[in-house]
Length: 505
Ligand SMILES: Cc1cc2nc3c(=O)[nH]c(=O)nc-3n(C[C@H](O)[C@H](O)[C@H](O)COP(=O)(O)OP(=O)(O)OC[C@H]3O[C@@H](n4cnc5c(N)ncnc54)[C@H](O)[C@@H]3O)c2cc1C
Image (cartoon, rainbow, N blue to C red):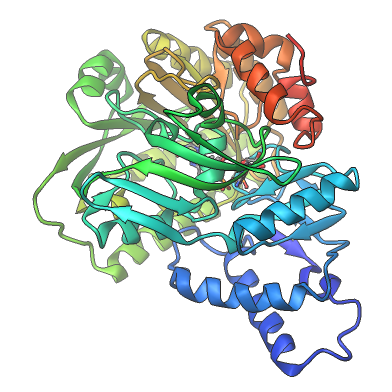
């Protein structure tokens, strides 16, 4: 995610500010460049939370003298969604967050939060108040006995992993990057893979939410069960989440085995592979017949971390740099895409990793792309994938990225993409700067035929009218929304498209 003009725009004139504040702002600028600018690879170690927070405190002190932050342009990770909020705030406490929201809504501004900007849609975008959650990243409480971990909502998943591990705990499952904030990931039902595991939101036991008036509402399974079922996957449409309590599991090791297999074999044994492994997924490039299968097993065996230099070499040079070169060639010469994809498939090789799970789930993604992903009932996985491959190949579409196939168990959050459905996720991607629309549109038609539910953080063209029938608890979500955000303070154009107006059936 990228801020343009951020610090310069914040300070109308630097004259008169004590050196300490300017130094703090310069440090903030450096920090912003480090973890907000989009050229930063996803998996870098961003330093400790403590450092970030102490810098943030200084920034907050400076900003309390210069409250408005006009003209900052926000861009998402993929670089293809932009907006210019009227104001940006970066609260460092729940009380500060609540004050900022109340002030903005009193002035009639709509309010949106931004996590790490890794969504592919315009769901963050606003011309009102944008709340940057990077000042709220502390761990509030960790209870190794119960496994309950309470954190501020802006914590990033890569910060949470080592914090949990220090107390013998881990997230039950994770997706393929860990750059997201916890609240941002929950808002879109971010998931990993594994037929026995739910998405991240299934582990939430409580949340604290700042509503339009600045009131803080505590949602627990006991006190607000209905609202919690809505808030676990909320698209940010109920209020700003300030704190989350998660049920974590004992720290575990993951043994990951990547192995290219003939696509036909992967599909013939799809159920066996999905049921027979803790985590199973595969990637397949259009115009090829090789699936890169990823099998992961949970174990108590000791981690055997891959040396950092070897991981860097593999991920930075081989997986990302080589892929980037191929993608750039394909963008320049689209007719060569089938051949380039076959080069990629031919270069895939077997590999093993054994480490703490939080260091294994996440992979490095330096090459920019855009993405759509649909959740469909698991039984349609094979047919849906084969139709999607045919779509690309018969129309000779220049698609340089693979389909990715993953699984999750059903759950009960009202807007979870796996609501009451054992689910297969099929993701389709397109390299940045290449036209994705004809492909994604027709891919969506295939997914529509299975009643597919689009990933809330990835591109799709559904509206409230088409989504409502795919979510049996749609009306219950809307009732909670009408109660918590009656004036639609947390709606933007995206939310109006996919959720409709407040109070709508
Ligand atoms: C390279 C890459 C890999 C990905 N891999 C996966 C994957 O493996 N599995 C998967 O399911 N998805 C994946 N995604 C999608 C990603 O997990 C989601 O889009 C996620 O929502 C991004 O989190 P974020 O912190 O960047 O949130 P943002 O994109 O910043 O925000 C997402 C939504 O959450 C809202 N929000 C953020 N913070 C708050 C808050 N505190 N309170 C209320 N609302 C809030 C925002 O307003 C917005 O509506 C991937 C995306 C990328 C770019």
